[in-house]
Length: 106
Image (cartoon, rainbow, N blue to C red; front, side):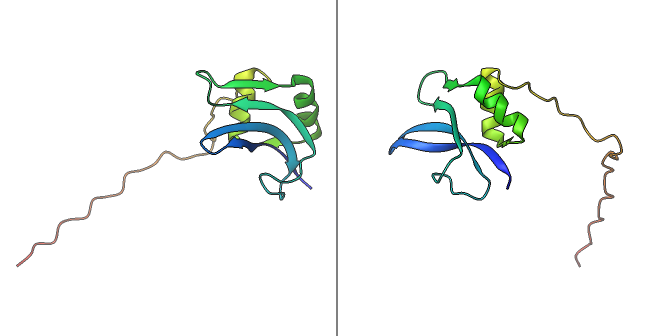
């Protein structure tokens, strides 16, 4: 089964605190996890990210796929490198559609 690196929510109402975990893709957000990688505190002025780099690299090598939010946090803390956006080589540029002529009202 596919593994995901994602966040699970902790903390009280209106004071979130997240834990970065490795979990099976189909398990619920706050359900059973395979491993804990670190914590994220978004309430600090600059989001505080504490992640075990060795453990993170181990799970990435095993094939765990980070969610977009987890990937952004891993890039921020230096665990992985950001991948620049590259458009597809065979993508055709968008051609403008011809404008419809206004029908005259009688």
